[in-house]
Image 1: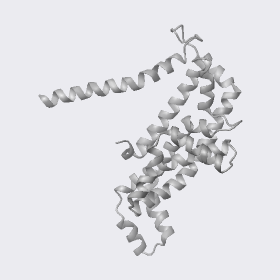
Image 2: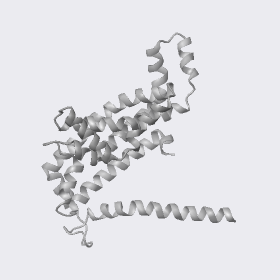
Image 3: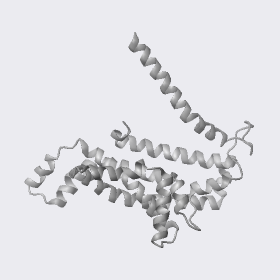
Image 4: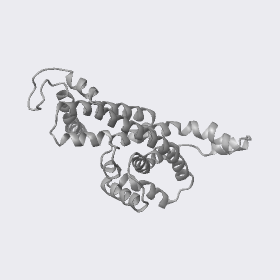
Length: 257
């Protein structure tokens, strides 16, 4: 009886929590189809804000910049993060584990300021390259954690068996280790891509002239008020992020438990 009551309380609490998270997103999606420029009431259904959105060249260029940055930074993060994840599994040094989690646990504001100071000290011109380096720096940790999680349940004896059967280190990695950790690599890469394309704070500190990304463009538009065009682009980003996150959770469900 008591267990049944506790289950109901947990269910209600879960529903309330999900409603708290998703009702604002649902409102944004609904009002992206509102036939009114002022978001104070529902007037009627329309697709015109999406037509205006896709005709906005500046916003499209910002979206393309975000896609380029996210693609390059996630690609580099996958390579470096995978190697880091393998090293963390092989060499169980507590300090390494703590260091790889610092970018994940540290507030983005501090990470953004630290990266900005680093670029200033290095006399590095802020622009697309600085954003790519910055995004790569904090995305590596997420890929490393994903790969390490994937390797956690792996039997290391299969690697020894492959070497005993005559496979060199390259063949052991390519034919045995890589297929085992591949779902973690894909999941980590999708997470890195999603985090990069949505990032605002770190991008704000490391962007230079002519390197406007989609989050920065949306922030500039918000200064004039929340318009249905912003709701439209936000809806696209929400759906895109949800798709990538769902794919990542299906490929490597251990990361989301």
